[in-house]
Image (cartoon, rainbow, N blue to C red):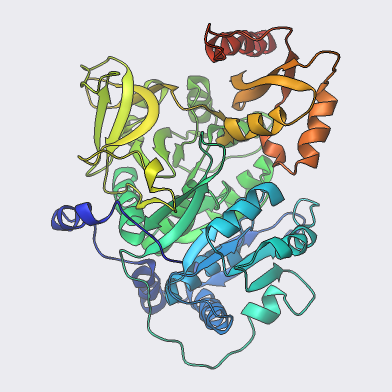
Length: 544
């Protein structure tokens, strides 16, 4: 893949001069573990339906990583080639990330929730050479789906199936013994090491490019403010195919030479048992995970005194959850805010979590600059809400093949699309979003994509998708539609239609409202703010 990381050149000299870009790759930290603590547990991988986890020391993980690296080379994967995998949290996920770094390939993890509609676009946009899927996960046949996609993937050289039983199984293709010499590590600090798609407002995913320098600038700042070290045991229950999971739950523990305890399917009761059994000290996720654990603790599940650090990101954290987590588990919840384009650029330090998390989304990490501006770009005073701009060492290298969408001005300020204010101590509070995205349980719902699919239905004349408040997930999704004369359209019709369109089920609206007339401006533009007010009543009535 010929990447075009246009946002790097102007930052290289100042970022490196300030020590914010350290010119390190994950190969350096992994090699350090192999030399200094080879027998230390690296991964403890729990899987649904299996009581005992798979345990790998750093030495054992290193053996598997070298095997995978050799076999990827044998499959024709070279430097800057894209390797895509659609896996839940498992040891193979981390091993693939390290193997790609070892040979200089670009890692492209994608969420297990995606189906053909999204995957065809992503794999073709990234010109992926290898696609790795589980045979089955959550009763869905990924192998059959992937095989059916092959005619539409001209760049793909090889499909690989984890737990498969054919010649293209992960075990046969990527773990077989290969004594061929492995060349020296090929990844450079300013190479694109990670390609991760994010859903935006343009109707199609955007490929976010990160280098080791951009990603690790974020992780080092986070490690410092959260006071993490090699003795921490990290629970990885949030999906590793999100930047939160990839950066903070997969790469960060390798940087620390610590241990990852991972869970592939979220089960709060089992997560609490893992926390106790493995001595977990830290985790990061959306607030939904914390709420679920609190419910289990209230029902009698024991807690662990070692579990003392937790960071929530992805959606606003209800103050009630912060209070419950501390009351029930003595666990202070640190709020964090960020984006796939930058990682978590603000966080509340654990020592002030009880005080600041309920009223803020954290303070900037090292090297991060924030600015709140009005509609004309003028800076606003403390406490006044406006458009949030960020300038950060962790800012991405640009959108793959979409540089016109980068949203960075000549001075390096990135337009987040969020509305925020900054308090007197420099902590930010996200007050709303100007981007047309709903966040449900930490998952971005690509509103325009859902609307575009619904617009294609012959019964629909107008459609608008908005979020409405929900106590557990933060937001849920409502589709408002107006129909063509003589047509009918039910919630069941919508669900069946979106299933036919192969849309990711997580993106399906949970409510449908059919209106005789949609609120519009004189020019014909839908007045979504009025629809949001209508939808807000659904959340309020449900909470009553």
